Length: 391
Image (cartoon, rainbow, N blue to C red; front, side):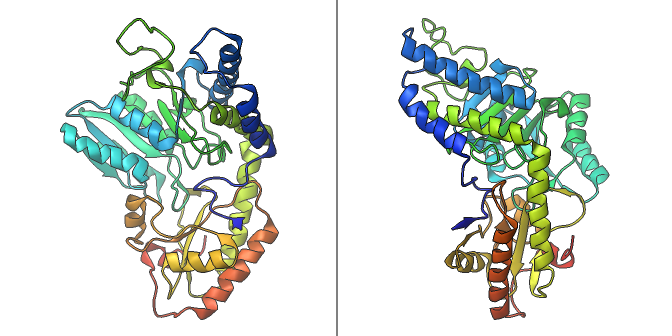
C-alpha cells in the first residue's frame, strides 16, 4: 500500500525513529523516576532528553512539556483542566472531535460554548472570535490546521486577541506541528499535539506544552515518583499531569522523530508536501466530475475531494483495492464537514508525508481517473466545494 493517509498517522516512520523505539525496549527497561538504581536513572535521563528536544522545538520550558498518549488526551487535559464549572468556551467551526467533544461534554458542568466561523477572510475570522469572547470566557480553542481541508486559521492573531482579553488560548496542533513552524511565542498558552503524525513518532504518543501562565487542574491522580509521602497530587509540571508509568519507548522514539523533523526543517517539509498537493490538485482539475474542497487562504498539505456518483467511502475503498490508502468519511470532524457542506457523507482525504513522491502521486491520479470514468455525473455530494474546484 502507498500511504496517503498521513493525517491519520505518518507511515513509514524514519529509520532513526524505528531504531530508537526498538533500542529503548532493550536498553531502557527501568521505570523512569520510580527508583534510584542505575537502570531507572538511565531511562529517566533518556526520557528527559526527549522532553528537552520537544521543549526546544516548540520554544517551551522543559518542565512545562508533558507527555500524553495522543493529542486527544492532551486536549482533554487542557480543556477540562482550565475551564471551571459554569465557564464559557469559544471554539472554531473546524474543530476535530478531539476538541469539540470535550467542550460539548462540559455542558454537564453547567458550561457553555460558542462556535466561531473560520471565514476565507482572516479579518472576518478574527472578528468572529472577538465577538464571541465574553467576560465569562475561560478558554478559546482553535485548531492550527483543519484535518479535513488543511485550512490554516489566523491563529497568531487569535492568540494575540486572547492575550489582550486575558483568555487562555488552547491550540490543537495535531495536523500542523512538524509541517509548519509552531512556537508558544505565537500567542499559544497551551499547545496540544500528536506525536505519531507529522512529528513522526510512534503511535500512543502526544504532547501538552504549556507556557505556564494558566494552572491546569489534573484529570487523574496517582503515582508520579515525586512527593510520594503526600496524598495530594503534585501541583507542578510535568508531574501533576503525568500520573502513572509513561510510554518510555514511545517517548524516546518521539524524541528522535522531532530531531528528524528539526534536521530537515519544517519549511522544507512544507514545501515538499505542498508541491505534491499542487500536483494532485492540478491533475484532479482535469476531471469534470471531481470536486475539490479548497477556497482562499492558507492551507496545510491536505486535499479533500469527492467523485460524483460515489460516496467518499466507496471511492476510498476502490482506491484501497488499487493499492492507495486514503481516508473517506467524516474524519472524526463533524463540525468541519458541516461547515463545508459535506455531512453526512464526508470526503476523500489525500495527505502526503515527507516520504511521498511525485511518481506515487501520478499513480494515484491514474487510479482516480479510472474511478472518475465510471462515475455517474448526475450523483454525488458537492457541498460548498462545488464552486471551489480550483485553487
